[in-house]
Length: 133
Length: 240
Image (cartoon, rainbow over all chains, first blue to last red; front, top):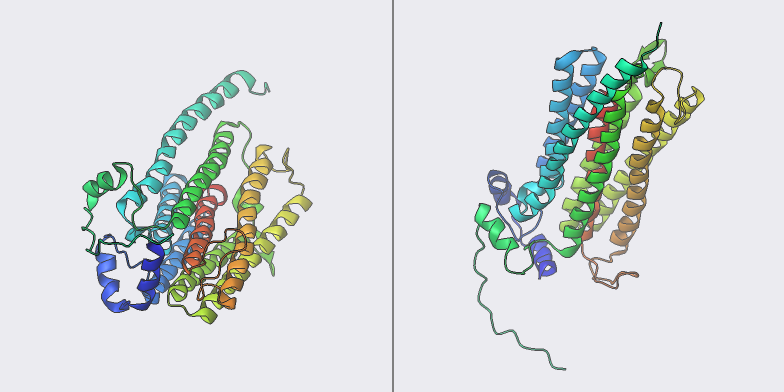
């Protein structure tokens, strides 16, 4: 069935009509993943801009929380653009999107655990193994 | 045996959207991913598992970096290159980032032309993607050589915390392996596109299943994932 759908979509597709409603809503479309080239070029451009921005954060030697938040912000934006547009997740059904995108979010719990873990490891190292000078 | 005639020619009912859609799609022992072929669903699930692998690498890197009492080598200086007389921080990594992003752009367009059944353009864009990928791996080999010459080893380095080397080689090595496999994957599929396999639905030599242009999109999913992982490595390892 799906293969038939995939083939039909390639033939009977009006690009312009699709461009807007595809962006407007993340609804199902059994017609498959056909989006205007312009959309990809725009995303490509944004990825370049965001990468340049994150490189400039390092180039100008920003530090502290400003550096962290900028780097993480650019990282999340780039990842979002790639997954949503290049990997077409914005146009998939929610059942697939949630099945794939929720589990990696739970990794953040793991991150939190390891932050605590390394905090006290660091503390113990400083307290008990500091070089006596 | 005679084929059973399909009597139900009625259009299927529209499926619910939103939260109701999730419940409806996942319930009652049915196929959960309604409009996605098994090939695409399995690629997504594979990528999910790969996400966990890279998450573990980055997490172990974070843990060692946060818990060590020895100062961490400054990536901005370690990966600086001297071009002319100027020392430019991280420049090689920045160029590698742009190359990988460009390869993602050409890949996205290859998928598009694939569904339009434009064989020449699809194959050309896929080969361009593969060329970008090979360039990336080449630059990574250069980077590794440079660092090894400067004395970076998995067990130590001249600038600080010993774990720098092991984290670096493990994370970038695993990512580079993914890029290399992606390049091979791209070339294999581009060859099939050029030969017209997907226009005549030629069966694969290994799976014996009919080939479709959807495989270009599935290859693209893998390739974009490789780019996605680099976004995280770039931010967390090189810029941190």
